[in-house]
Amino acid sequence: MEHAGQLQRGRLDPAWPVSLVLHLVIGLLLLAFLPDVQPIRPAPEDSIDVEVVTPPAIAASTPPPAVQPPPDRSEEKANSAAGEDAPPAPETASREMPPPLPTSPKPVTSGPPELTQAKELFSGKTLASPRSREARQLLGTLSGGERNLQLCNLEALEQISRSRPGSAPDLVAPYAMKAEKVRGNSVEVDGGAFRSKRNWFNVRFHCEVDPAGQAVVAFAFAIGDAIPRSEWQEHNLVADDGEADQ
Image 1: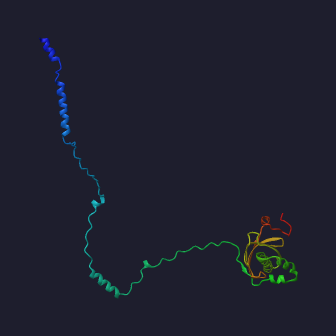
Image 2: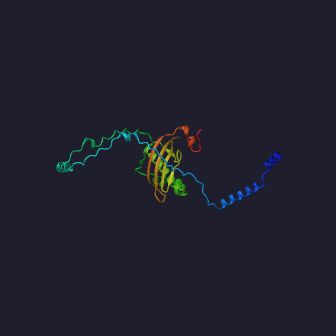
């Protein structure tokens, strides 16, 4: 009998699974009909941005400005009335203009001599001479700027010959040191040279020719120093016609 009771106690009650199923079904039904419950969350804490501003040290030490009473206008009006009747005060020394600073003299620089205006022109008389027949024929074959240049070269020879008696110039090279400038009826020579007794000298001149290109109407010139013989070959200068410098 004791063994039978132990067996009965060790066996599983057949009604227990059924009871478990019923409890689960009832729990599901209750969950289905319950209202939605939102989870309870803690309320967020309000955050405030705090900025620490440090006042300047000067502001703490500087006292507030004192309030001054308005000025008495009666005394100012009296002074202005008295000033109108009084004669104007002389200029003070502080208003006087300071004396000009001393300027150092400009240094004197050497340069080419200034041009001398010719008082008389000679190229026309020279061309009119019977001995200038070949020169007139040569000029007849030229036109424009080349003709004006040759007329001015002839005038340069005549002016040099008369300004330096006995020099006997026989050739002008207007392009020797610097190219000449011919613009219309004007001829400008800044780096010319002329030959005199187998030597070369610097010359500058400005020449004006009439519109027809027949005669020189104005001439100014300046004679420079002798050109060293070592520079002749560089500038195509020769002692005699057809003879190159050696």
